[in-house]
Amino acid sequence: MHVNLVNPTTNQVKQTKVGFSWTTFFFGFWPALFRGDWLWFFVQLAIEVFVGIFTFGIGAAISSIVFSFIYNKIYINELLSKGYKATDTSDEQILVSHGFITNNHHTATPTN
Image (tube, rainbow, N blue to C red; front, side, top):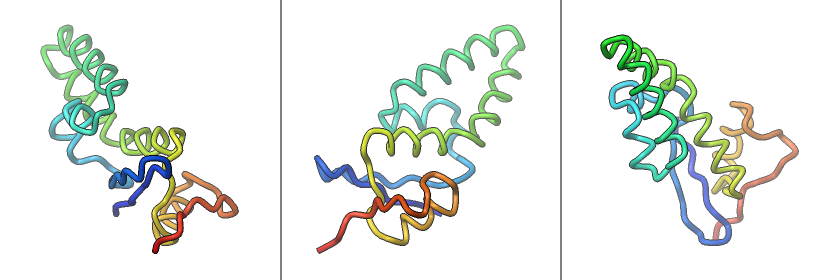
């Protein structure tokens, strides 16, 4: 399931998956880099390198698995904190149903 978020100031739209991140599972820290999420790119990279060195790479794989479950949630919360809003009511309902926003928090921007 995907959700579209728009920055009301710049009108930049970002589409992101809600739930498990298969790209993080398979590619580790690279999806954060391609999304331009510099903070979490460096956090994941540092963890994977540090843990991987001492465990012959097994710790890096485990780190990717853990981040697969939490990274999309972190990314969506980061976008919402930067002012991004749901593009329409269906995206808003997805955010409500997954606990990102409350039901009385109307974030959808009207479409023309």
